[in-house]
Length: 115
Image (tube, rainbow, N blue to C red):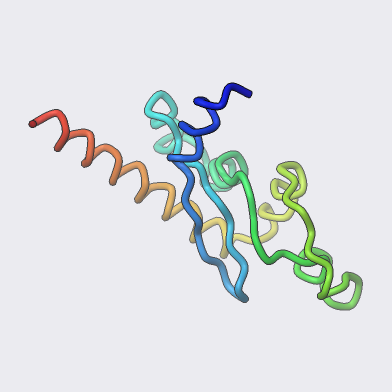
C-alpha cells in the first residue's frame, strides 16, 4: 500500500473503549461515504468501519466455558462482522462514536472553509 494512503487512513482512526477493558479502532468514513452513515443500518456501519481491536480474548468471543481468557485474538474483519452482529451493546457505542466523528469532521471543515 502507498505509504501516503496508509497515513491518510491512520489520521481518520480513533479508539473506542468498550466494556471490560476492550476497545476497537474505527476509521471515520471518508466524506464520500457520509451518505452511508445516514442510510445504512448501524450494525453494517460498525462492521465495516472497525479496523482493529485491542484486548479481545477467546473467552470474550466464545465464552469463558469454551475459550481461553489468556489468549488475545488478533483482529480479523470477518470475525468482527460475525461477533458484532450478536453484540448490539457494542454496535450502539461504536455507531454513536462514528456519528460523532462525522459531525466533528463536518464542523471542522466548516470552520476551515470560513478562514
